[in-house]
Image 1 (cartoon, rainbow, N blue to C red):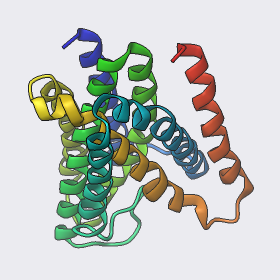
Image 2: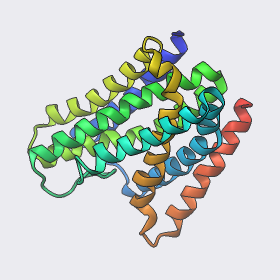
Image 3: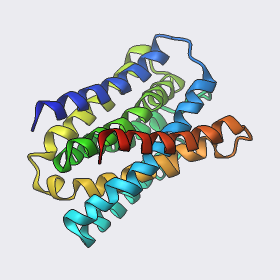
Length: 238
């Protein structure tokens, strides 16, 4: 595995930690900016999943790549919205039980592990695709870290444990990147798996966070995210 992949995975992991630190260190942030970031991330992630990751997965492994994408989509739904039905992106403002926070962490650990797989798998195809996938992942890492840490605080955990929850997500990301080269099944089907997970996070996790809000700026931010994807794609010459 190249040092580039490791560096990108570590940077993505640090975004999780930064999001967690924003909560645990009680850093003030703009809710409006956070919501806009979620909308932009949704547009970017959906675009890169459908336009690049999924087609490349099909080109590499055919029908099995499509099955891997479906499995990735279903797996995230099972872990985040079946085992942990309370989870959502953004700050948790209501008191929750410890079991809710732990189940949400378990679900997110799987998701962030696949984030690392996505980065490594994309770089196996090309540096340009790896860069696009990295950007898509980083865009949602900050609200992801913020969400899990605020959930732990809402469950009564101390600030240190809440921060460690965000750190755990970052570690899972790096682990996913490191294991992709060493596990044949991830090397072969990691891209397909990543397509399904990325599509789910963008369309089923992030879009509902702003879809029902009658705020034109958030809807515009979603389309801006799609547009930024195409600008980035042109810049890296996929």
